[in-house]
Length: 430
Ligand SMILES: Nc1ncnc2c1ncn2[C@@H]1O[C@H](COP(=O)(O)OP(=O)(O)OP(=O)(O)O)[C@@H](O)[C@H]1O
Ligand SMILES: O=C(O)[C@@H](O)C(=O)CO
Image 1 (tube, rainbow, N blue to C red):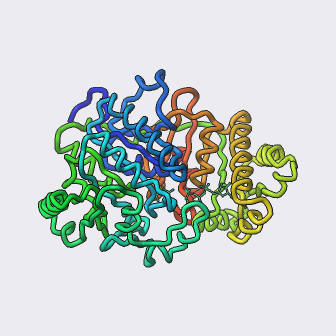
Image 2 (image 1 turned 30 degrees about the vertical axis):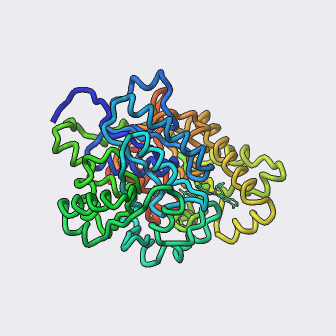
Image 3 (image 1 turned 90 degrees about the horizontal axis):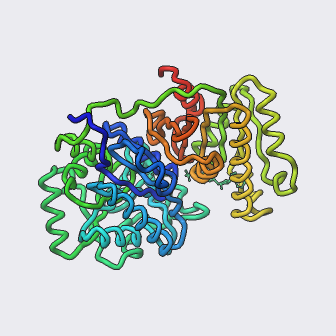
């Protein structure tokens, strides 16, 4: 192993903020020192990156395909200029995309820009219950299309057959890398890929039921310029670089402990987050709800939240939602977009007000909410630390005065996640 400052080996493009953090977590677990950038890094911070992997977090999941392609190609260009050897396009483990795309369009554009003719598409993340079999995506025991994701407000997933979904977003031919080929090992995967390529397939949905399948896929695809999928597909990639003698001998998960007060900000209304909020409330811990209707009426909700936090010596939870029904009622009144925007804006303002008041550790629930908070705090880069729960690492911001953050995808984390995250950000051993 080497110890010299790193040239990035793996360049990653993620279509949302918490998805980026999820991927970064997987790479750190595998021993790659990883930095996440909020958008393309500015010139003045680019030279300070000392990472084996760089994850550029975009906000492109639900934007029109042409915009997502443009943003992703810019990110690719930046990563290639830094010398990255392999590119990973990260999307959601539930394959979140609209009827118009854009996973297929972005993957094709990246393939073309890289001068490559083939890539895999594999959103499997078995640790969080996402598996792919015969091209069909399951969430726990249900097909994607029966998992609740068919009702998602922005990206309703009504078809679990990913070959069909991806083909509708893609000009080239989409194929299937079946589980029997995957589980038979690295050589079998390579042989099947050669066959798919010979048949003119440019993207193949890969089956994967467990981490072993994902490690095999990662190893078999060490030489592909582009891989696309959920964070699970990245499991095997650090091993490829380690076998090639390119990884440094260091603790990839090391981040400094940040001193200061803490807060939990939950703007997500996903099931896992609702359970985490209920757990906090049941324990009688201090919490205040940000009511979207009060925000719409121009009430001083942000000021009230800041005063509430100032009145409590203990860490407080500021949350938007108790139940899924509440969201529906608010959306009927205000419209989904306006309601979401009001809550996100409020969470951002609360975050920056709390930072002024001395808060330095932020636990945030929800992808959009995390985006709003990270932007309000003007964060440019995140150094990725150790995992809190599958898919969620502890992070420390840089440059400037460091802030400790845990950015949680809505449906990730156990019921005690908030407490676990607060302890880890405070440097308390698990
Ligand atoms: N009571 C509510 N009424 C209306 N909108 C709400 C309410 N509570 C939260 N929201 C909005 O719902 C959206 C939740 O999205 P967010 O991405 O933060 O969480 P998520 O979808 O659970 O997470 P992820 O994208 O990681 O799966 C935000 O725009 C938030 O402002
Ligand atoms: O892959 C996932 O499920 C997450 O990283 C994510 O992208 C949720 O928005």
